[in-house]
Length: 212
Image (cartoon, rainbow, N blue to C red; front, side, top):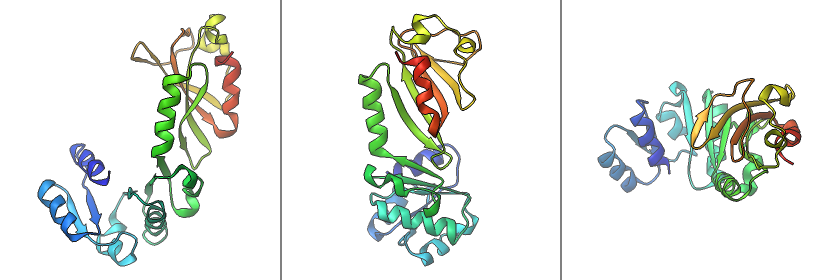
C-alpha cells in the first residue's frame, strides 16, 4: 500500500521519501521507482526517522499493515519531530478509536470502514453512511442516497426550505454520476447522493430531512 501511495504522490509532483525495513525490498523499490528516495530502516525507531530528515517533512503517512507500528510512527512523528500533518492507516476497525490526537494522528483512514461504507452505499438507500471522520472525530463527512419517500423528495423541498441546522451543511449532490454544487433553490430527486458535512453529535439531525 505504501508503495502505491508513494507513486501516486510522485505523479502529483510531491517529493516523496519512503522508509522500508527490509534491505532487499528497499533495493527493489529503488529500481522500480527511481523518483522516490528510499531509506532502509525501521520507521518505529527514532534514529531511522531522524536520519530520514523528518524535521523538514510536511506530511507523514503511516501506512504499514500493522496498527501498532502505525501508532508508534504517528506518535514519534508528531511528538519528537513536530510533523505538521500525520495520516495513519487503520487495518483493524476495532483499533480505530486509538487513532486520535493523543497518538499524534491528525487524520486516520480505516480500510475496513471504507469498504463497509461502500457496501452500505451500494445496498442501503435511505440511510446515513459515514464516509470519513475529520477534525479529530469532531466532524463527519456523511452520505445519504435518497429514496422516493424521503421528505426532501416527496415534499419537493428546496435546499433552503429544508432549513438544516447550522451544524449540518450539504457540500455536494451527485445526480446521474454528475457532481452538482448545492444551491438554495436546488430540489432533490430520488437516487440523489447527498454528501454532507456534519458535526459528529448532529449526524442524526439529517434524518428528518432526508430519511422517511
